[in-house]
Length: 403
Ligand code: BEZ
Image (cartoon, rainbow, N blue to C red; front, top):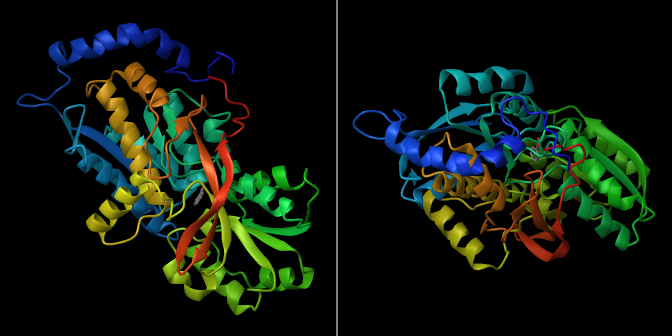
């Protein structure tokens, strides 16, 4: 990566050269500067911009719950300071994102922003975070640009790029000799980039995409697409839908009589957190993702037990990504001694801490996106079970990232 930065207020170069001096400022500020309210230290304000209504509601709730769990496990203190979380509903609506992000930063005066789920909302948030130098942690939205051309020292992602989960599935199908595939997805950034990740491994291995069907987000009228798919008789269909849309698509697929006739695959969002609602229609579906319910590692077992105990429901990948956002924020603020102004110290810790996640340990790429394993999974009795490792330590290509 080149050292050139597009970031106006906070370049990586300035961050790195500030580390020595910045650490001193951090230490001094807690003693000398009126950063803290009289009578006690001011709370650290974290603003979430996540969907608490609409088709992605469950995703936003899982992220928020698990991030709060990560804070509770640290005694609800970050670098010695209490926390206040300001929650704003993004409604997964990109046109509202600029106003809501500005509200969090300029009116609520939060110290950092966490969000979003929807890639279109992420684009607006990241633009502002870059301009303002506000710390931003993305716990889901996969927009490739956020850790590509929009990458910035103050922006980190704990989830995936849209390219990542699709890429292993293209290889899985190609290795099995599948040749003719239809792609069907919500036709916005996430669906299109997920499809590209799939094509980038499937086509060079000899596969052909015979048709791409885009459905406007968040519409769930799938009948015309299903009729067309049935007439094309492909070897498999790769789809990108999540949340409420994934429930509807999988049920409609079975109701249309396609289950058992044509294989339905996708990135794991197709069956994540929704298998109960999908019922028998989800059984047997194979997906690729950086997490699976049955990952047999101590961190996953203890996280799932703690999450169930706290919220009375099963954890899913969205909860894992929210939990990891909490762990990343903890690492950053502990390194900064709770001083949110000590960004260089925070950034350095966030870049270098290996996150001991329920998905297994992962590291941050130089573009600030997880380098992580991807698993082939299959739904059995409503559980996303690991079939095998599909790609190890997969890193996003981070095209266009200059930091
Ligand atoms: C996205 O918009 O980036 C997204 C939404 C739901 C699941 C995965 C990705």
